[in-house]
Image 1: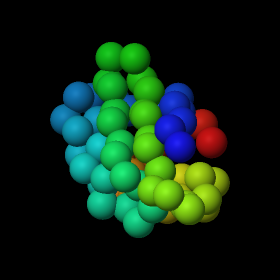
Image 2 (image 1 turned 120 degrees about the vertical axis):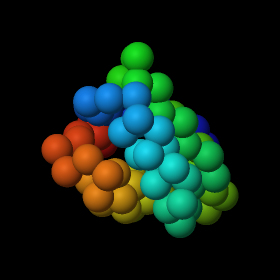
Image 3 (image 1 turned 90 degrees about the horizontal axis):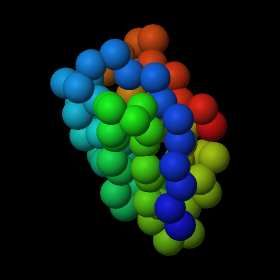
Image 4 (image 1 turned 135 degrees about the vertical axis):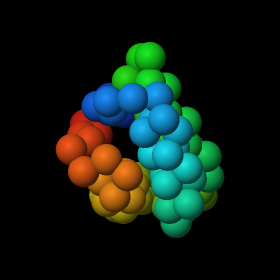
Length: 72
């Protein structure tokens, strides 16, 4: 399953770091963060619950940029 989320990120470097953090999160097959469109596309692993995984993704992203927001 693939979903797109609106994300607030301040710079391209942070977007890249947030993408890396999301890709390391359990339940994520692939994550892509586009700084220009302020969107995160997440492909979930089979059997993963999107809401639960995205809470973990948000925690990981807040370690990179504490004021980031992902519209869940």
